[in-house]
Image (cartoon, rainbow, N blue to C red; front, top):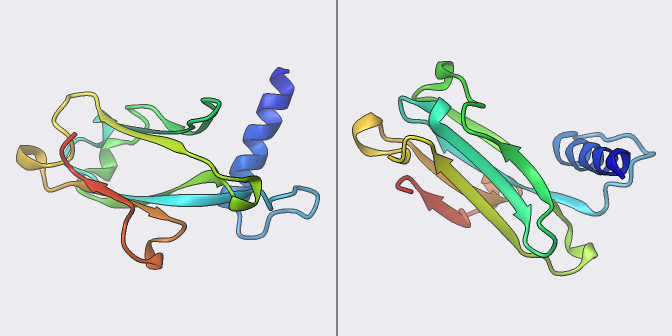
Length: 132
């Protein structure tokens, strides 16, 4: 069972992160969301997770301390795999946390996040925030 879980994780990430996945991996069931993060002065405080609401499968996980201090006040983009509509209706739980508890804004810099379905060029963000 453990090998199956690791294979599923590998397929999800290859499909989400590769522009040209190998033919032997069936990527038709995976799409993605993109999170734009403008860090404050303490990126090591920030963590994110995306879970399938139906079965609690973790599709993406960046625990706090995953981002280094070199990203202070920088903007990055993270692609997170999701199931495509061909698989049926899905609901997800997106969690962003700050281990210090002050979010991405205010006294530690003007940070924020935006969550987009697919690419950031595809329109308005689905979620946005800086205080959490």
